[in-house]
Amino acid sequence: MASANATIQIYINEQPRRILSGLSLMELRDAFKPAADIMIHNGHPMQSDVELAEGDRVVLIRRGEIPPADELEALLVSRHGPGIHEKIKNATIGIAGCGGLGSAVAVTLARLGVGALRLVDHDVVEPSNLNRQQFFIDQIGRMKTDALAENLKRINPYVKTEAILARLTRDNIAATFAGCAVVAECFDDPAAKRDMTIAMRRDLPAVPLVTVSGIAGAGPSEAIRIRKVMDNVWLVGDGETAAEPGRGLLAPRVAVAAGHQASVILRILLGEES
Amino acid sequence: MEIKVNGEPRRIEPGMTIVQLLGELGLEPLHLAIEHNGDIVDETSIAGIDLKAGDTLEIIRFVGGG
Image 1: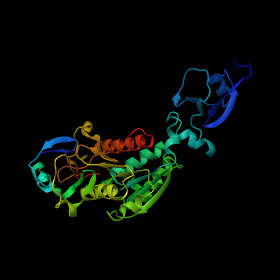
Image 2: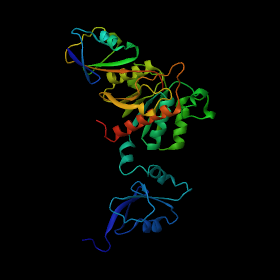
Image 3: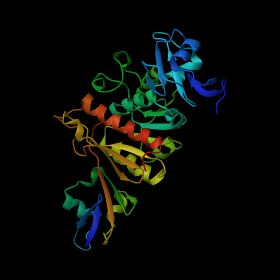
Image 4: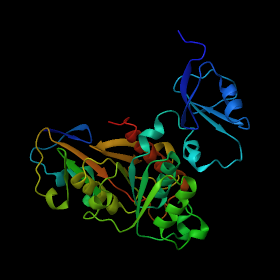
């Protein structure tokens, strides 16, 4: 039986704290941060009050206030729901090619707060990239790896980035991505895509690869599917719609495919893919 | 004889090679990643492989765009 002054442990802005048992969310807000106008309880924003329980995670935010550095990382992932960030914050993800797919996969994984992103490309940002790639006008002419690393830092400074200037071939893929938890194939060129699967299966068979084929044009986005095709190889795309003269690459289907890639990567990190 | 291609059973002529099967499937070998019984097969080894009953093939066809 609980005594009158029993305590429970909860997390307030991700810091462990002991509070009196029986305390409610709004009582906690009034005691710890009365100016907070956003209360997130176990990943969900709350309007109504609720009694707090052992192990609960409460985030208290004041709109418009830039939080102190020691709280910021926790606040950035406070809508994830319990247990997600712990499982992904130490993983390094390889991004092979920082164009339409790679820049969007990297932005999504940075918003998730993965541990590190290894960004590999050999090209510069050019105007024709901006119809689908996550760069800005004032970055035209910059190396894609550097420009992307800069953008990711503005989204989540706790995600480490490694920018590698390289043209990937079958002979340097294994050395480039050794130590990665998962690698995303994000090339444009079909020969480079093929070489990625061949090199990863041959030289890094224990590292999952999420590769893409068939995302061009303005066809229905639900034709872009996810299929596990080999041990540790997932394929995203409709499998046939090539970029070619008369059929270009457009932001919506590229974003859908990159979202599918990031989703598979998250599920692998969470242990939800076989 | 029967083999599996991308998870689907398929009847082929005995003694058929991978290269012949790709022709029958209408696939140019240029941008394919092929796994034969779990082993990745590259351009240099593909010509020497005859298919046997029960073999499994996974064929990924890559088209451009990214």
